[in-house]
Image (cartoon, rainbow, N blue to C red; front, side):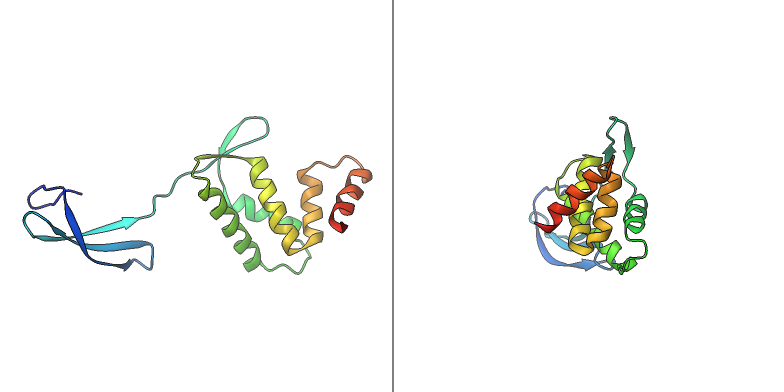
Length: 149
């Protein structure tokens, strides 16, 4: 960080606090050369996430699409929209922890199934049946047996 007064590149942080409702960090700095003070703000860099589909197409990550898919699986189940949004928040956190700009739809699907399995087993089976493209009742029953183990 260059001092706006003398251009020197070394400073010390004098004060640090949350700003803009926790979306930024405000830092008061003091130049080690000219002793002038100045303020900087740090923001989280929003990295756009690209989803690699099973056919290798790429599309921008869409939070609403994820929420709607989970809502569909949870239809007529005792799962609140607040809980669904919390699940999506957790899934997004795990995706951003990967520090990659691209993620496969398969990885997202596995994370969704993990969260649904913890939340509501019926919603989990509904989602799994579509996600894994069950072809007949045997595949469906095998998934149910795995849940009972």
